[in-house]
Length: 130
Image 1 (cartoon, rainbow, N blue to C red):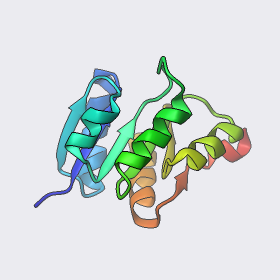
Image 2 (image 1 turned 30 degrees about the vertical axis):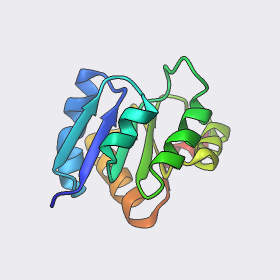
Image 3 (image 1 turned 90 degrees about the horizontal axis):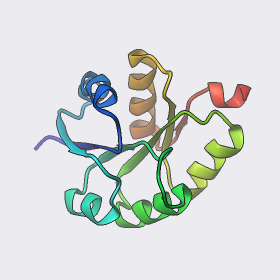
């Protein structure tokens, strides 16, 4: 059975970008969730969740904590435009396995997703420069 991945809260152009990235990372099954909803994500139970938490109306870090609680065995990757080292640390402490920047190339996204899944932790190296 294929491992299911889920894209949550991403724009349509971003979801199109991630299709080939997720297949290359070994996740051919894909669920799309327009809005970030913890209970809906809990029903899907994806092995990999890629979410854009930048535009959340609730506290983004609390959302990550709740998702980590509901999807305890899943890999959670945050797709963000915020390039601050403190933000990456806060996201990891809240439960994110990986942080990817929105200006990443498909190759960089693929490396990031693969690394987050394999090692359990990945932060785009450009956060260190911020």
